[in-house]
Amino acid sequence: MIRARFRLPLAAFSLKVDVFLSAPVTILFGPSGAGKTSFLETLAGLRRPDEGDIRIEESVLFSSSLGIRLPPEERQIGYVPQEALLFPHLTAEGNIRYGMRSAEQVPVSLDSVTQILEIAPLLARYPQTLSGGERQRVALARALMTQPRLLLMDEPLSAVQADLRHRILPYLKRIREQFHIPIVYVTHDPGDVMALGEEVVVMEEGRVTAQGSPVTLLHQPVFLRRVLQGPLDNSFAAEVVHNKPDLGVTQVRTEKGLMLLIPNQKEDPRTSLRLGIPAEDILIAVSAPEGLSARNIFPGKIDQMEAAAGTVLLRVEALETFLVRLSGSAAENLHLHVGQTVHLIVKSHSIHLL
Image (tube, rainbow, N blue to C red; front, side, top):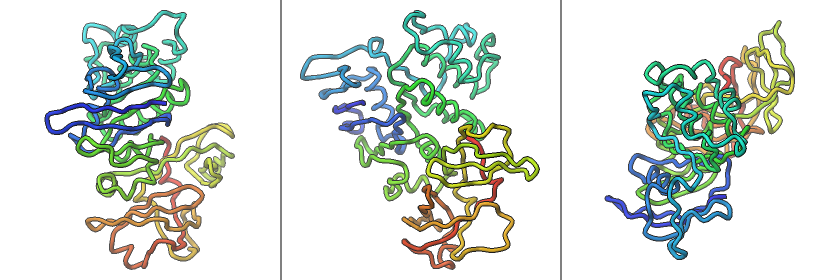
């Protein structure tokens, strides 16, 4: 549990924050200049507020009333900025070991970090020989080896190509699941929000304007504009039910019990997976379709509709919550409306692993 209540004067405005953060992964979302990075730097101790309190669980990091101002090195917080900023004269392993604590203190070991992040083949290489995604994984490993009680990430994938983003996001999920370290993650990319976020804090001009789960924030204009414009994946946890290699598919069950057929996997039954389904790859039918080659067809109810610039975003409840993006013309021709029962159609090959 993080309690942050403070005021920090900035050039354009005063950053005023008053939030409780309790989710394993909290996303700070908003446009450039909203104060997201300054919020992160204040948690890390790199900026000092005029007044307020910052606590992690029962530990006080800052309190103007109590006169407590812990310096960054005493806060036990890992920080991963936009640029990896690795030491060029050290190998990847040297960079990772730089902030390493003594072995007696470590629930996070070098072996476990290299295994989770799949960086063992990189350890002897120097930063200039690593790709952008590899450098980010090394920087993340270095932050983890400081044994943080909180991990702060400031748009760490902003300079990484889209295909690499999809490959790196699963590593962040593994960290959350394996090490139980809470993460506060800054982004303006709605794809990151939907893939990672369990709680989202929306910021505009130094203020928190909304807080909640990603799917509950679609009515927020600053969030909705981004969602309507950029690529967007629905993200679900699932487990393998059984493989059908002769048919080229694997049957999986999501956390809420939705059965899906995905491209054939080699994992054993009950293996956990994370699935992504692009919002624009889901088709809508207003009546039960017949004679289609698509393998995943299931009913749902439209819970919310938002439109902008010729695009309509639907939130559909179908055991799981789906976001479906279609053209304004398609939505008009189908006479779609909130409360309507529809059928979602998803080709198995539109479903990918995250």
